Image 1: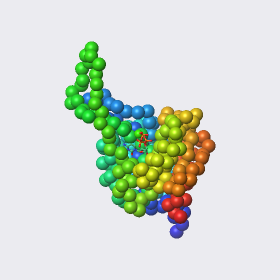
Image 2: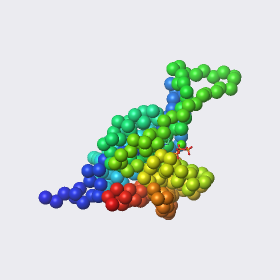
Image 3: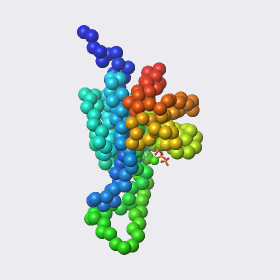
Image 4: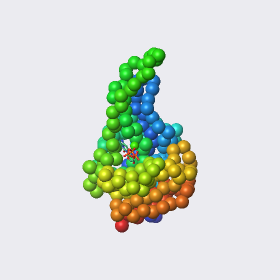
Length: 224
Ligand code: CTP
Ligand code: CA
């Protein structure tokens, strides 16, 4: 019998993808968040599933919809929840792609009751969240690990430093100076950097096409 799945390059592979923003609670009604739409991460999840992979998509709060037999979505809110969901499955994964815009800081204390306004300035103390991607770089064994770098200046240099520091196999640079790149847009312009610090520049494209480019580069390296 002919099975079309047999022809797909990532058949049987397990891929973990993080996507979207995280929300860090200040009190029961307020949070610290960011403008990540989740579009890039969800597009990568679709592209990976279309290559035959089983996808574990760990997503922060987004409006994105996804429907694919091979995509299992886990919804999280905070960086800590994302960290726990990712670590619950990382060992079994073949590839991990961290596309989430994880908050770098969270309130040191989350108030249990709504904070009432006063005439005085309000100070909220922040404390760093866990770096999920860096923690995977430490644990990594057989896994192929991919991160993103969002930069405005010194982009190439900063991205290369992140690749090395977090023990990645590939880093996708998003430079916010590039027109049409960024959070709310449907397009993106990326540069991919590998472990030898070779760079590949891509044209401005739809996020769906960018996701296919990213998955192609990963397939080439994982299957070689
Ligand atoms: N990342 C993560 N957990 C965090 C922060 C970042 O997993 N707490 C991941 C992102 O998903 C991305 C990569 O790390 O794949 C780089 O994120 P970025 O914000 O560009 O870099 P940071 O290391 O957070 O440094 P900075 O924001 O200071 O540039
Ligand atoms: Ca950051």
